[in-house]
Image: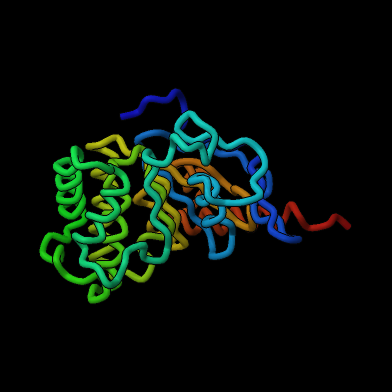
Length: 255
């Protein structure tokens, strides 16, 4: 699947300013291809802004940001990236299958693509385990089912990069477990690169690599094991709190 050299995403000096607030502060990071990179940090730290920058929908971005070998937002990237926002991205007055048929027609227009569209829709519904709800109106689905329907839309084009903004928020532990199993299957079987944000620290253990964020900056970058070892912590959450304490100490004025 991968047809670009090096990192799937590479940022150098990435900065976003909104009004008088600097949301991202000249950050550098990479996202490895074919792996799950977790973007973790408290609400309001800049995770969603970073993700919008990666998919090319964020305004007033400065610095360098390359995605799948092209500048972020380049038109050729649109069919190669799947993006799932925190809010469901399906029409509630259509069934799950009708939603997917609609979005598949946008991705694969023309009569000659009809069979390919049907196959893509069936595959996406199966991958998110919504076969038994394929003909149910989206407006009647539970929160977890809506989240999976939105994910199915993102999977229609078999994306090389899947950007997921807090995909498990509000879901029960069983659904969270099932979704993370799907994420790992996509990476292992399809070579999909996943960038997944969360403010739930126990999800960090499910990622191959982590970017820990706070107040628009990257505090740490590494595997869960490496971060725990460096901080001499039992969990990633303890490691994160240790890094926050270190950052606060460095910012304290000397007397």
